[in-house]
Image (cartoon, rainbow, N blue to C red; front, side):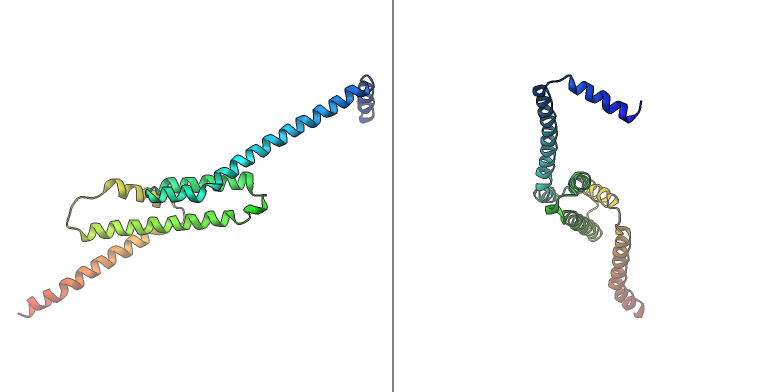
Length: 177
C-alpha cells in the first residue's frame, strides 16, 4: 500500500465522521496531550523540590558526621540533575555546586581520618573506635579521586620522625656518660 492509498483511506474514514465528532476528537487529543504535559510538569516539580533540599539535607548529615549518606545524597541529586533537569537555565551552576559540596565533604572526611589516627597514635589507651574508623575508611574508599593513603603514610612518617627526635637527645646524653 502506497502513501497515497493510506491518505485516501484516512480521508474516507474521516468523511464518515461529522464535523461535531471531529471537533470532539481533536479536543480529546489536545486534552490527552495536555494531561501528558501536566504529568511531566509534576515530575519536574518533584525533582526540583528534592534538589531544593540538598544543602539543608547535606548539612543535617554532616552534623551527625554521616558522610556516607551525604555522599549518597549528592550522587542522587547529581543523577537527577543530569537525567531530568540539565536543560533548566536557573540550574546552570547546580552541577558545580554539587561538585564543590562533594569536595568539601571529602576534605572533612580526610581531616576526621587524620585526627582519629593522630589521636590514636598519641594516646596510650589501647581502645580503638572501631565503628567510627570503619565509617571513615568506607567513606574514604567511596571517594573516587582521593589520595588519603598518601596522607596516612606522611602522617606515620612524621610521627616516627617526631619520636626519633624526642628520643635522640636522651640517647646521646646516655652514651656520653
